[in-house]
Amino acid sequence: MIRPPYRRADEIAAYTYRAETHCPACVIETMITDGDASPAARDMPTEDVLDQCAAASAIDRADESSFDSDEFPKVVFLHQVHDGATCDVCWSGL
Image (cartoon, rainbow, N blue to C red; front, side, top):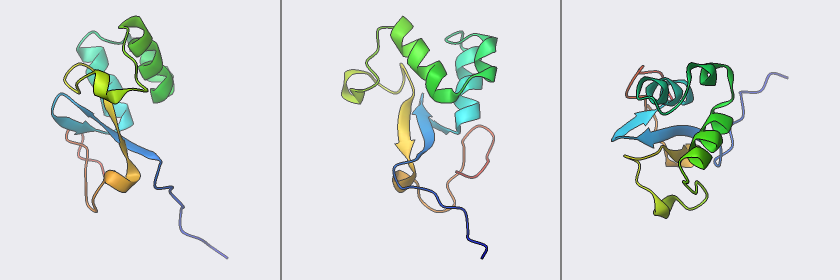
């Protein structure tokens, strides 16, 4: 039996950063461009990069009320994304 791909509602679908919605690849590229992450970040899982960058900037990612999305990316879960939503950078579907 062929089943459609299953995605959990609490899965990370995107990130909101500097007033835009970014797919995982684009949030890393934006952080590299802005000098917040090194080019080596391209070869790492997004969450690992964000954890390292947050630690270096003394940002508590577990408490999103302690920082603004203009300072650091915030998580957007799948259940928060509407049908047809896209990345504001590469326009790929979320």
